[in-house]
Image (tube, rainbow, N blue to C red; front, side):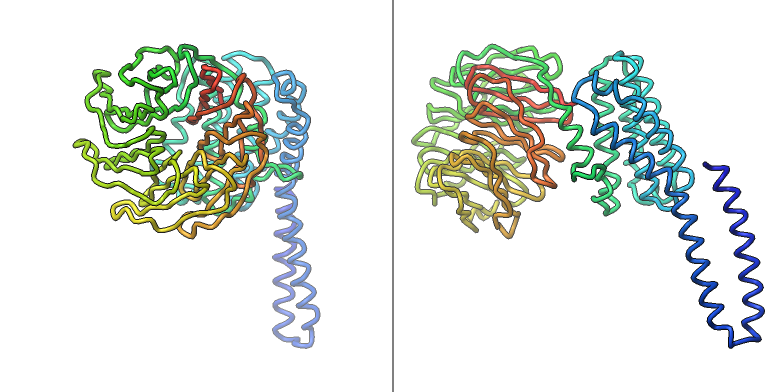
Length: 497
């Protein structure tokens, strides 16, 4: 392919130079040959377009083979193995295309196909750490080549290239290798988005993109954590620990990765409804109307916050504030460190079931069917979001959207600052108890025992996770795992493949 293009290019360049020279000298003395000039210009354009199409042929072929492989692949290792030759062909054409396509975005596309096709080809050869490591090294080679491109260097911040390459750090364990590959794929796709070309991550004619395909092969049940003797009401995590709260009046602390329970925190006299973590503290809210503050160093309770006159149902925390929502229809704002209640927010006409903090906003959801938006600092209510037809049970927020889940079985998507409802997501057949956003996904847990995985760009449900025997009350996610807590007294860890 490269030799053919080189020969064609030399012939075409020589011919075009000759035509340009002859026509130019003639036309200077023969103005009446304007028609010839236009014809030559048209022919030059046609020839140049033909050369561009030839350069892009390998890229299109690589894309076709990757489409063929993905569409024919079931979410199993056997399915990947059946399509390995298509993955191999796609990688080969993508490698060829990288050297000849003219634009940076096309080079990004070629590298993306090479990374993904190469990884799945290696996976299809054999299921072993050595095959995963070979695929990882191939991916590193493809990405290194892209990062040497001057235009890509200009696009990325200086630390971004190093961050992407660190994803290929040498490791031996299969799970860690898998995590690295997933991180590479996600991080690599972000190159297209950073270039302002979100549509360039589309791979399939039916409208799905690669992340949707990966979602269909992801989130496999990995661990089942047992220990609580009642419903697991709430989950949160930091870089080292997973925290769970339960109606059995306790909090449990689990080590991330090993998933061993290393502490049981006791002190509340009734059900523990909510848990939050920030800095050196973990916080718990209970039906006993109190909030407890626990030290992450000693695991001792260092403060008990009293003020609510009914169940403490929800907690949200920032570096400055701890906010608690209660069935007494109020939200209390506590100063971090001093643990002083500095404000009591009133406005809801029924119990507060969820609170969330993001940037300058505090959000509260209530049994009065509404979501209230409060300005952090002034603590004024700036808007009331209406639309749900029943209790609003849970909230989550990212940089673009506020999400509210309800007893009406729906999830509403609200735009930040304009506070308009942009979308209503339907699919659950029970109360939406919990939600979490991470990366390109929204996760929702329901009384219908399932977890739904939604793509944030298309709002499509791309996966339904089943495994709990009763309703899913709580969720927390990271790059490599999703954790769910249930009324069935268990915690499930789902590996994000």
